View (cartoon, rainbow, N blue to C red):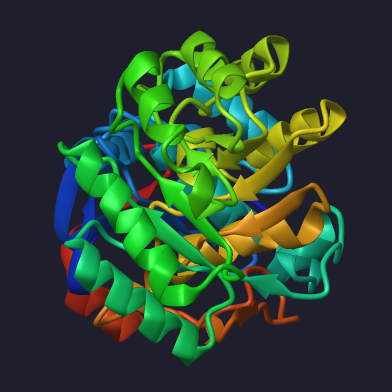
Length: 373
């Protein structure tokens, strides 16, 4: 089986309401969907969700990198040669992980379809009986977040993730305690600062005021390049710390391990370059006793299904936050969410169906690459 052609779609997924985190507000979610064709007639789908604040990529740039650099490298390749494909991509251009993830995911979709197996069976099998996801709340006023949290509990969510890290950390503290009061002491709550508290000193000061909130963990409280600082935050506080933006490569994982800088790591396919490197990173974390999560860059059913296959196959990946499809007004896939679980199909590949008409409707630019040109 050889890859013969690629269709590249720049798309915009309309959100039900703006997605607000510490460094940006998204009224809709731009992404790239690719479709790889093969000489056997099989097709595989992949997705890139670039984030200039994390991976340093934008949709327009990732689109051109895929069109002119990465896709020409993999035309004629067998998708089963996934390590070689990553070698080719990494040799052609450094970083650009979200763009590489799109190709990686599409290759796994093709592998699964060729083998007539779900992707998780190709990377470890079924290590979990069920896959749960939290309710993710954007940054808003404390009373609004508290009301939405209470509603989420009533809907059947089994855990909450709060986005914080605004300019006013005192307001963040107010948000967290307002939610805790609204949902009671038992409901698991994790918070994601998205680097918003910046420095070690400020983060330690804020975190030590949150002990009574009984948080499951605090995600990326300081700037992403400061792994040594993250280790210091962990030493000076009692709430478990998760590294997110700080984890983009295997080298980052090894540095987290070396400095004993985190209790958890948040691996995202868009940061790591796809399923193949994400699973390697999870294995490295497991060897050091660090629990992993597969997180979201607000992908559609394509990227979200890929992430859940990685979760399913690795016992050390104990949580996931792939809720992008639930946030969209319009989608292209049919990943099956039933509160509080997501259900992966046993169908071959990613196990989802793609609505091509809907894909065309949401496309803002498209092209075809074939024959290495």
